[in-house]
Length: 391
Image 1 (cartoon, one colour):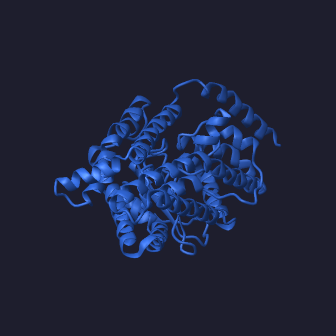
Image 2 (cartoon, helix red, strand yellow):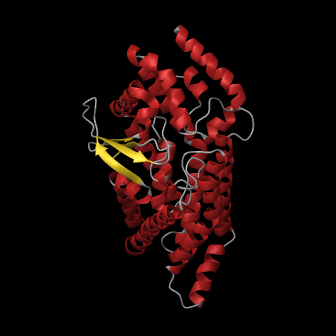
Image 3 (tube, helix red, strand yellow):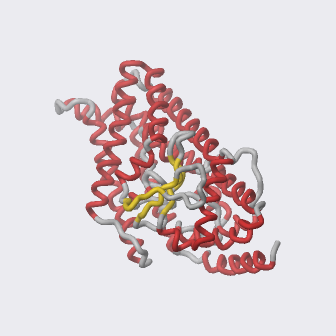
């Protein structure tokens, strides 16, 4: 280990002692996310186990309304629940900590409407596919929807978020097409979008100045390594598998699609509970990918000398922390803290990159209700489709 690296890690450790004090900005966001996810999960469990879904459908039918109105009612209730939480995450907390972004009313209304329309269309399509083609028809439909979700992730992000001055950019002349995107939210990290063979690197333009010339090259090299090491494919496969398991479990427990709209509502609730389990288990898988990538990049001498300061800068941009309590990090944070990244870099045979938040994105298309509730993106529409990555 070089002298510079030891000095840097000592500095990180010293700063970490201060970062463990209560109520820092990332910690407040974490508790907001816990509250948001907790509310949605509890209401989903109540709707399924207490039979409120059946009561809702029955009450609406007594009023002469079609069964599809039950989906509208669920969507409206979800919007009401999320409204104060989004205000806290998108307006109150950034103001309190004098952050460089804020959530405008028009931007929020547009994002909520579009997000809700996509959710509504996806679950209605599954409901109709189940009605016409049974469970096998619905399973085929949800599989095709997830493929489409990967194919159209970036256009969907553009519709729901606020991005501008997009331009092709590839200073290192890599084979992957690269888009440099301007976004108000500094935590927008971009990512890799598109189906296998059609991938594009999406890079946040504001990071060019924040990271400097060497840091910007390191960012592009890291995305390239994600592609070359097949880590994104592992994350995609793992996220698809988790959501297909969610589909089958929810269909079995709810009686979907044989029992009509009641089973569809129960299906939504059970899927949400399974996705919640994924939020507790899959972050540790995402962390493996981060440690694996750090190990790979440290094997290149020119990159190794740039990596530690690069990690510190990226963590600052995406609301990361220098250190966390082990149990907090294992459950709630797909990206490990700065100190852990400095200490635990190693190679893994199975390292599914971004699997936890990819699962969350895909869950949106199978009725899940947690895709905009987690701490990293509550109240931040720019991040609802492309959640922050490890750099």
